Image 1 (cartoon, one colour):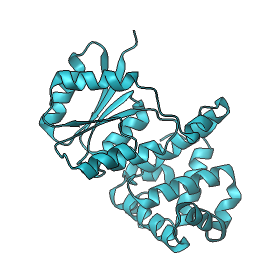
Image 2 (cartoon, rainbow, N blue to C red):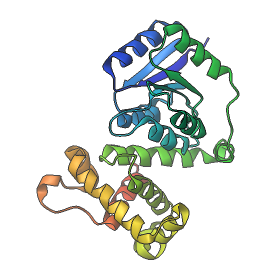
Image 3 (spheres, rainbow, N blue to C red):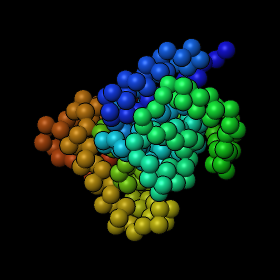
Amino acid sequence: MKKISVGIADDNEISLEILKMITEEAEELELVGAASNGQEALELIWEEHPDVMLLDIIMPTVDGLDVLAITKQNADIHTKFIMVSAIGDEKITADAFAMGADYYIMKPFHAEMVLRDIKRIMKKPERTTTAQRIFENPQCDEERHLNRRITRMLLAVGIPAQLNGYQYLRDAIHMTVEDTENISAVTKTLYPMLAEKYHVTTGSVERAIRHAIETSWKRGSVETIDKVFGYTIADGKGKPTNSEFIAMIADHIRMGYQI
């Protein structure tokens, strides 16, 4: 019998250890990873695609609701979410369920309760959105692979997933990989398309992408940036322009290079 794969994210060390103990001791469960902040939780979800994610709401870097919202934008990830929190605010609970949470557990919790709820949501029929039906088409395998590579690349160079610029960059890189001519018309084509999609101004798109790139240069891995862009932060060459950043990432992906 296939075990239920479980991921855990909680910034409280005691809660994290308790949840790890509960999942590790249950014969029907398999713990595939534990995270202590939202950024690590996203990386765990991208890499492992757990069947169930036990997700704390209040966490550093990216809070649980943002992790939930970001993940639900990816139709190829079918992880079910149990939100875990010491907060019983009705609005937060409603927001969690509106964003796609499957269950909500209040702290403190008991092992039996956690195990019961994991089994319960695994028996629930999966909610299928229009986007999911499209991505379930076998012809979309290449599309899913491209989305995963872009996501991993952006996280690897240090761009937090909660930034607006992260999503704009993700889409801009995707469009550039598919059509290289887009990079020669960033202001005339890419920015307007993104602005229309997200109901913002082209100026907002440009500034958000710029902020994301600056964040990457402040917190990103020097080794990864050197590998992707051909020089390190310490070389004094300055940060690439928005167009250069998009083009370099797109080329790196198009050539099939790994990070």
